[in-house]
Amino acid sequence: MSREQLQGRFFQRGELLGYVLDYATLPLAVMISEDDIDRVRQQSRSIELRVASQPNTSYRGEIIRLLPSSTKLLPSTTLTTEGGGEIILDPKREQQLQSYQSYFRLELAAPKALKKRFDERVYVLIEHDPEPIFWRWYRATRRVFLRQFDV
Image (cartoon, rainbow, N blue to C red; front, side):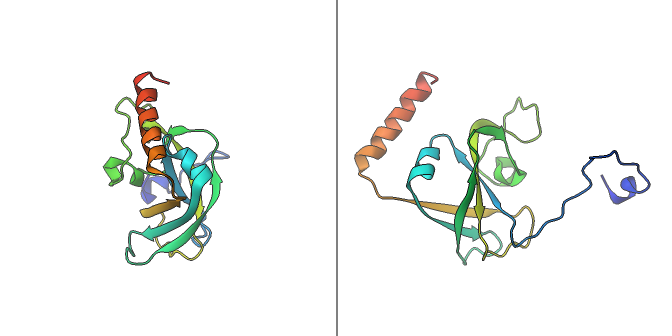
């Protein structure tokens, strides 16, 4: 709604009027696919962040919270293909930001990152422990079979 439409309007108790944000402690929302969530949970070594407005500067991040269940609801349009991201929206969606596949939401803290805008894109690189190539092939083959048999 525009400012003119809000002027003089009555608001119900509990109705959302706006947000009060502290940009210094604002968490970053990252959506992780179901295929990659086990490696993020068990083998994450470090997290590197790059803010879109400052692509030449990298920051370190740390995991604050990993939501235990997957969801199709997305926190921002920035993550979708319509907003320049990689997550495809469900064409039969019932809600505005509903993805085609399920994702796990990961919240990161980046205290030193300069967050100037609320919905700014952040590129996240999660480094994992090294592993033999055999395990990568095994995991990829397993995913193919699980998808084929709808498990």
